[in-house]
Image 1 (tube, protein in one colour):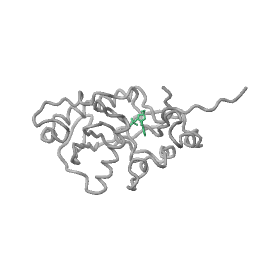
Image 2 (cartoon, protein in one colour):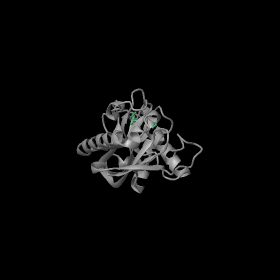
Image 3 (cartoon, protein in one colour):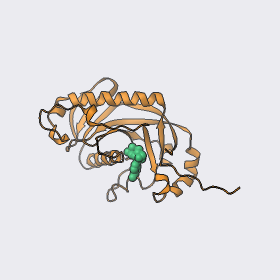
Image 4 (spheres, protein in one colour):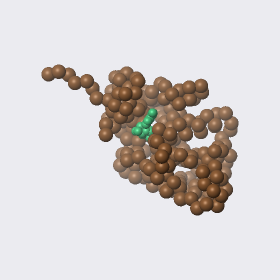
Length: 222
Ligand code: 2AM
């Protein structure tokens, strides 16, 4: 029999286990609800693209949410993206395939475009993180490897998922160049932590305790 060429997925990534996915969606709702009710947030509506004192439902603002919550490792577009074949053939990728991993979420963030979770990749997880993931977005900045790692929780209408990682890198860059942004309040419950503001409608919640979610590293072919 002739050997078929191996199929490349739309993307490789870590896919959340169902229970942890449900939990993270609930956490995300809680985050958006509390953020939207924060006085400091209401005072900065124009930066979010709304008029002063306008009623804003953040859950509605982020109209789209991915079907399967995941942390993308390598976007391949079924092989159309340069370097996907090389990525897929790495020993580390083959070894990681269909293995279970715990993802560590250290922060949640919301911008006028996206809402997402920042993922702190472990050394083990960095083995399958593309070398150029950060450079691809910010070629002139030397951002730490893995700083683009995230889980998209929602996007505003007309905004593509890929924007979430770009927004996250913008946070990382701002945090490098200045201090940590303005501390503007605290959230409680599921999403306990400090809220900081980085201008341009960019809000970040540093969780006082990291959220851990179970996942499986695999490819998405849908
Ligand atoms: P995301 O990782 O921010 O959620 C399918 O479109 C998945 O691949 C989505 O999860 C999406 O964004 C991610 N994706 C789409 N285009 C991409 C790109 N050019 N680079 C990296 N990831 C991309």
